[in-house]
Length: 95
Image (tube, rainbow, N blue to C red; front, side):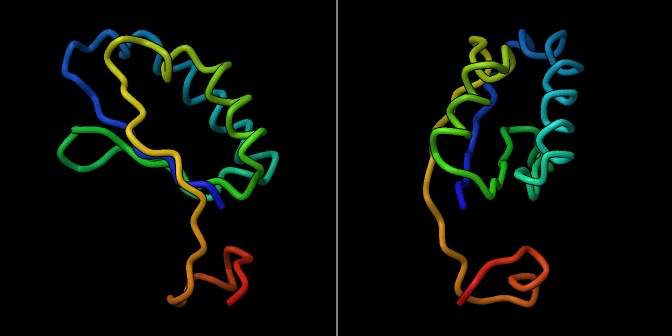
């Protein structure tokens, strides 16, 4: 699994790009590789959880203008192995 965390810098440059961003994300959901995603409640950034290779995730990042605009900073791209929690089986994560 790959976890991405972003920070929004408050310039709102990203807002006109949001419809295309959400369209691309929905395509990844439909493809079965985006498990969870969304903004933080305080609108300071967001997170995405992928069940994909780092190469596939990088393809997405390179294709989404939202993720490369000046207002969005990717602060973490981490391989993550959840070990605990009731949603592991539902997400297809092994122990």
